[in-house]
Image (tube, rainbow, N blue to C red):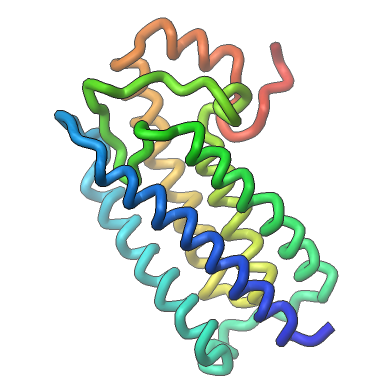
Length: 197
């Protein structure tokens, strides 16, 4: 299977990924209300930096992939097929997560007076399915492109962001919802469904 095929699959995947993210971020901007931000300036800056690297890398990879040939990884085709499978799994999970969040979604960590505790959809099983979906998406991108700059740097960046953000996020949820969130934590996994019930 030629690299052209996987390049085409990546382009299709990325278009769907971008449409899902942009649509729900646009919807989130329409939500009004008093906001109390909980995210550190370091995390916001890190997200902006990783986002810039990611989108510039993707742009170059789509338009002129040969420019990024220096960052290519010698991965076998079966791993690229795994990337196809992960991409096919991650997009529905991402859309399902966004739909379940509804007006509670925001790219920045904050609490609004109107916030509700979401326990439907994937949140019935996992507290942070958005991060799971994004991790699967970036892993799919890494495997499809075979490029550590396009897929690897954003994947590592996401892991660092999540490590910094999740403790703050869960503290904010406990502050907002108290025992209801503590009980929710006991019956759900953080990134994958809990096997301990």
